[in-house]
Structures are given as structure tokens and as C-alpha cells.
Length: 78
Image (cartoon, rainbow, N blue to C red):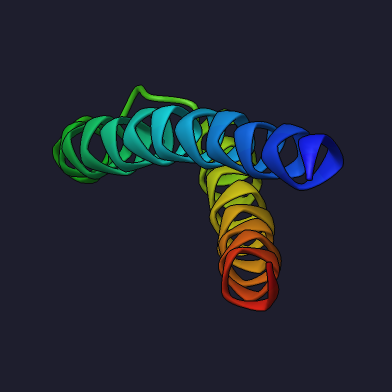
């Protein structure tokens, strides 16, 4: 019984970490959108760096979604 309680606590910690990372990634998406507007109207901006940032943010969001599915599945099973 103690092991189930420990696993549940561990899943709650992972869920909290996931929510914090998700909030950070949403913030990055919003900031990236405003930088995209800035790049669109500023001909001197370097586009390559912001494209790399957008790709990284997209990959992080996909990874967080996979993590959410795993954590939600484990919480349902336990």
C-alpha cells in the first residue's frame, strides 16, 4: 500500500512539473508570436534565429503532450 502511495505522489510531482513546463512553453509561443510580428515588419532582423526558436518550442510542446498522455494514463491505471 505504501508503494502505491509513493507512486501516486511521484505522479503528482510529474504532473506539477508538466504543468509548469507547459506554462513556460505557452509563454514562449506567445513571445515567439510577438517576435514573429517584429521580424515581419523589421527588415534588419535575423530570421534564422527565430525560426530555430520556433522549431524548438514546437518540439518541446510535442514532448510535453506525450508526457501528459503518459502521466494521465498512469494516473488512471493506479
